[in-house]
Amino acid sequence: MNDQIKTKAQLIDELAAMRQRITELDGSETKRKQAEEALLNAHNQLQRLLEASPAMIYTCEATGDFDATYISENIKTLIGYDPEEFLSSGFWAKHIHPEDAPRVFANIGQIFKNGQHYHEYRFRHRNGSWN
Image 1 (spheres, rainbow, N blue to C red):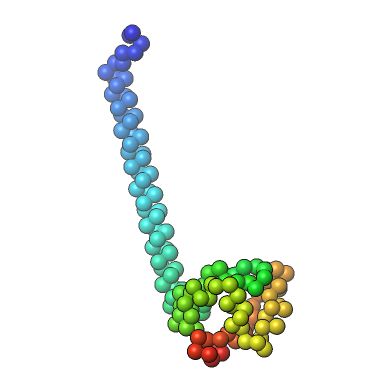
Image 2 (cartoon, rainbow, N blue to C red):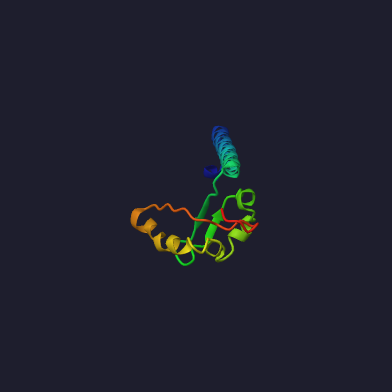
């Protein structure tokens, strides 16, 4: 029975350990919240930079019609399309100027060979003009 009875000093030590753990957990939660806030701020700053950019930023699949998987929001002001339209299947390939498309698709594999690739081509604006 005496083994189960704790001394006042033991109880104080356990209480101190519990308080320390609570403080550590609170600190971890505060650090997590601060990290989330910093990440959100960085994301918002990146969005503002992308929206103000004179260039559209996009990512695409590495095969097939190279469908876009991301497009910056400034697409609307630059060429008149909503991002959702641009992300639809085959959209990018269908809007490249017919005279430029063969060259673009013939050379796009260079990214795998060289690790990068750059090409210029005309793209149909929503209003029908070519940019």
